[in-house]
Image (cartoon, rainbow, N blue to C red):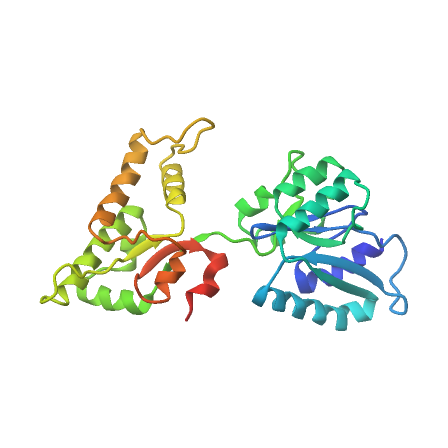
Length: 308
């Protein structure tokens, strides 16, 4: 099929694989790439290029990066083989989802199916029920699959066990650390990175940091600084209890009466009350880039907002 040849070259630039005359879903962080093989059968002809349409909702630096990749592909592999990628930017992901649902439902006035499009992962299940998805399993070697986090790969498998959703630019939560501020504190207080390997360790470090910064100005009382904050305290509870082997969320209630939750609570409330944790609106990057805190847990998708 022409489309297999199209994607063989395209994948080198974009990490995208399309094979059948159906849609293929690929995750891009909290969003999804789909693809439709509308190329038909036959050989590629540079004199009569195949056009692959793409919808996305990228903006700013992500849009610039995608545009550069597409331009590079169109002017190199695409030009040699006879493939052109045509991009349509749709600002809101909800607008893309609505269009996809119209296509899946066969609504009158639905737009033509794109070859590639970003959308929410849950959309994959709806489209698969309409027979619009093609599995990706045969497009990757076992070695290539191992380059990705197993959890991200498994998330892309639908009930039939096949891989439909592929992580191209998936995000996850990580621990961010201002090494300039931390190293200064580490030298003075004997704290090391090993102290940050557990939630309890972060809590104890935060209390020590607040005390240490307060001691730097003996003539000014209670001016110690916060050490840590998180983008989502709910996630802290959810992940912490999961690590302890428990379950925080049930279909009917939040399990806040368990001993596991008490352990998470104790590791959170004490440094908060003593000033070691910062509880504020907005994202942790707001406090990190101004030096108001030293450490935070947030999404890798927000790394550009942390500054240099």
